Amino acid sequence: MKPQTKARLFDTVGHAVGYLPLWANRALGRLIGELADRVPNRSRAVTERNLSLCLPELSPDERRRLRRQSLIETGKTLAEIGMLWRWPIERLRALMREEPGYACVKAALAQGRGVLLLAPHMGAWELGGLLLSGRFPLTIMYRPSRTPALDAPLKRARERYGARLVPADTSGVRAVLAALKRGEVAIILPDQEPSFGQGEFAPFFGQPAYTLQLVARLLSRTQAVPVFTHVERLPGTRGYRFHFQEASDALGSENLNEALTALNAGVEALARTWPAQYLWSYKRFRTRPDGEPSFYD
Image 1 (tube, one colour):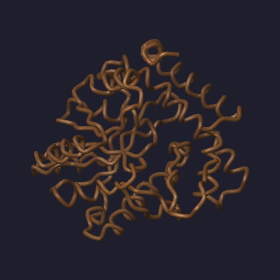
Image 2 (cartoon, helix red, strand yellow):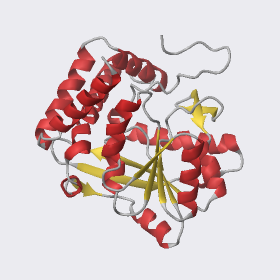
Image 3 (cartoon, one colour):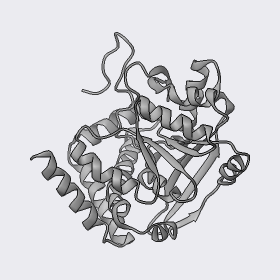
Image 4 (cartoon, helix red, strand yellow):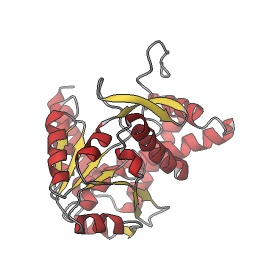
């Protein structure tokens, strides 16, 4: 299938799913997740591997239950792309039940300081940027698709209420740095594995994980406040809870190992608190220290 055809199909499906009410959207996501759990596939295999590496204290039955729960939540994330495409911002914000910790964001902005939101792959992470659009100038760093025709509709959907998306390259880093220096808000996915030469290994669930240096560098060059954030998906059709938690000062430490260890510890704490909503199907340990075999076949 040609890239342009894939892009049109992707865009059409996204818009079609966007017509579904929340209960149907959640049901579609559950169906996707149930199928992913029952039929052998890459996402299930990676989820199993990551759970065995990161949560070895769980029994086999407990890991199987968590695998199923995680894949169902991942299915819901996929279904929510339709909401990203079509739902008016007012309709989305009406589903937001609480915003614990948001006061730390408002306080930092009132002081003229930038805010670096650290949003791991968990919960309704695709909706987070859209929900914050319009509140303040917002710059979001993302990794573009290798197929430009597929990237264009997703970028358009993510930016449709005013957020600015910048690529995870030198130009994107400059844009985020400038935004933070202006006292604005930027979002980075702290658990996305960086490109070669842009990270160092630091512990994550007791395993060496190639970790983004950018967060420490941005914090060392600005007065920005680092804040962990994620959109918790509530049961049934209750909606969402948007969490904000000011991060440790250690994330901006001049000791890079200390900074990266603190960054991973913050993500790990969130994943342990809401394990079913963390994206365990992501190959977080793709890059291995020299001489060590791959975790993923």
